[in-house]
Length: 91
Image 1 (cartoon, rainbow, N blue to C red):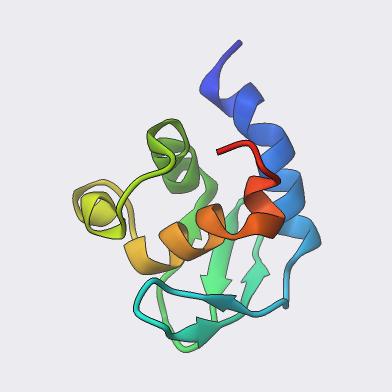
Image 2: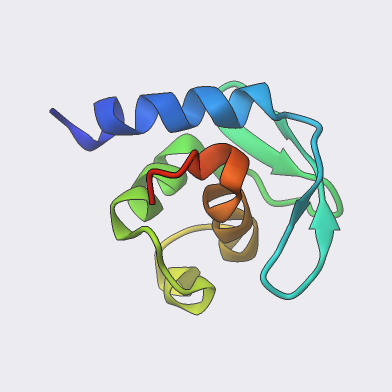
């Protein structure tokens, strides 16, 4: 099974929680909207493609700082993927 296939249930949960509040490791609250295959966090101009979330997925759980070299919007990626609503007890 590919990473993309393994990530699909998490992506579904990410889409279901569009507009909900999430908190970065540094304590900053934000929401996001799903724009096709990307996230658009509030308070930022960054567009985070689903592929960046898939890159981070096999590393979970991961310190936020480790994502800096791998994805756009690492603080947002960390916050979304580590949120209990998205992790669903799987990592």
